[in-house]
Image (tube, rainbow, N blue to C red; front, top):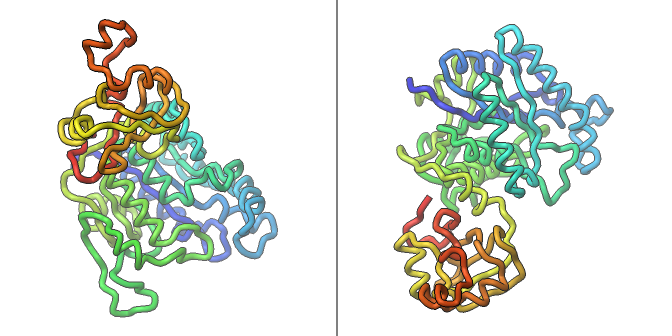
Length: 374
């Protein structure tokens, strides 16, 4: 088997008991599987839930807290318990874990996004096992990932993983809810996630977890858009991760045989950056952007909206609506002076340092009708 880079997401339901405490038997089963996959030469990145679930009983909560302050307090206690457990159980195998806590802000800020990639890459090169979780202790509601399913999808894209494995307590995706319909049929292989699938997916299925099947489908759709294949299901025993990689997992495999990895710069622009303004382009520029893989030039721009600086991300609109977004090489005021002018005129006026307003390498197409360049 080829050596692969894998992101493994372990949910609270497959890590803890009904009371929210770390279940030693479940936990050790994951440890054995991690060790076996590493011994087979695969690179692993672990996205592990369980901090809030492990911590809330220590604070005297009878059930998982629903308030933000309760969740954050439980995470503050539980995160240390969780990483200590990983360190203790992995030490006999010579595996040293590194804890990485992330928030949405770490993805939305370009320098932090790059630093996250560099740090995780360095850990992998040193043989360290990165264990990632959302920084629940300091996250605010509007800056959370929602759950670790989405976090694992974004990490798998960031690190250009070969596969994202989402381990849960249900053995894959079904055409209806298997908990209420005994005739529900499992979907073993899917090319993509459709809106119809999202519409019938249920909510959270566990008293100690935040993510249900719908969140896993949304995460899978995101991972696929970044060029990462996905497995959603369960497993047991030392070779469960290896079985999944061999195609024998107890769950659903999602993704076509060949997917194109998306460059980190374009991932950041499309998924994480904030939009600072808008550009409006004519039909010629629209055609060049959507079908020719061209950069956006001043001549094709006829309107600017917003206040932004060089390096900010803007949306680009044409007669078909929103075409995409990109990182501008000029400020809004500079573009207003340049727009509509062709290269010869700009050269005479000596008012530009590059002919592109948005270079094709900093452009992400959102309109579905043209050829996407990743």
